[in-house]
Length: 154
Image 1: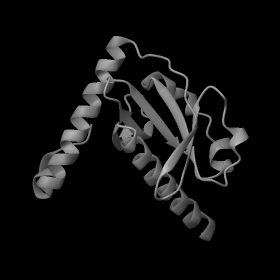
Image 2: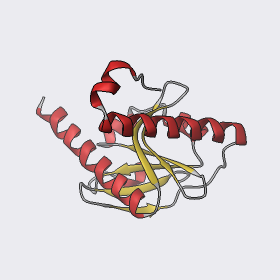
Image 3: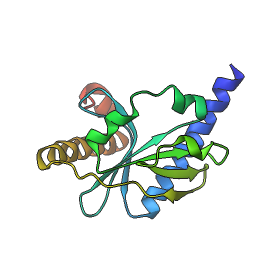
Image 4: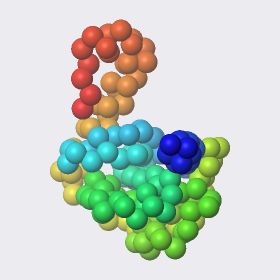
């Protein structure tokens, strides 16, 4: 139980730092974004040029090694990064994806992700999902009772 709590704390810290890094780099960030294939992106980030980056957060080596689905995220973004804490063994992360090291305060890109542009129809679908989710989350902050009464998540 204690190990699970520590992993959850590490995940939260790495997520926070990676989100701050992406924001500092000029990207708009949404956390925990459900994708059309049923997967959930830890961070879906929108660049000023319309490019999408997914950041997948890994709390420890075991978390990464038991994740057989990470390649599925490549279909939903132009760039894919893994974000890990400083103690994570960096050599586990494949060279074709980017690598971010983060803590609760900030992060740093250790390796850039390769770019594989989305097809126009997929980009439009991801853009609509991003915009609708962002609008619903903003509305839920402004009117929590109204959101609870009827807004369904995408």
